[in-house]
Length: 114
Length: 118
Image 1 (cartoon, chains in turn cyan, red):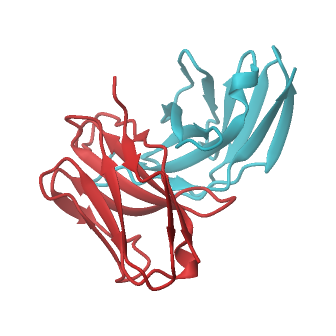
Image 2: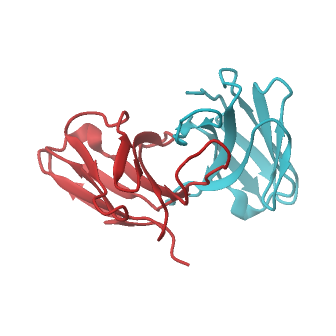
């Protein structure tokens, strides 16, 4: 399983962009990179995923390094509702018979200041 | 629409008691996962079902943990003879399809059941 490393915490001001880094140096060539976030007292919520190319959706952007050993989740304009624990996870082997077991690290606690 | 629901939301058990935690996945979802989340930690995989088949139970910490999904919808995680180290939030997630080589399957998580063993 891919192991991930993230900073324990980050802070941002509302309306400013936030860049959340993740190192996943042991990721295999066919593992997707997923980001989930967890608000207090809730289950994790899917944010975005990618394999090799940068990805955009309505919630965020995902920038993947060329060697795939790191990625960055980008929230373009942080809001108070974005305050959560953000998990970078690995584990869906697109080329094999793996079934999507997600391997979570400790995540990054994002604090957004008004 | 209805998401993944779990019950009870909170459970307090005395050490040695058996507990059963229920998960109602999104209707029609083929894949179902259980995760355990200790305080301050990320979720850890316990087991996976594809319909009624338990394809992987490698994350279950001991033989006191048992999961089932007999009709391919509702799932129950049972913990026998609970111990203090079982105290955690137990999360259930479901996804629409069985996993295959081509398409990605987003996992939808329930709110979890917080188990406290005294």
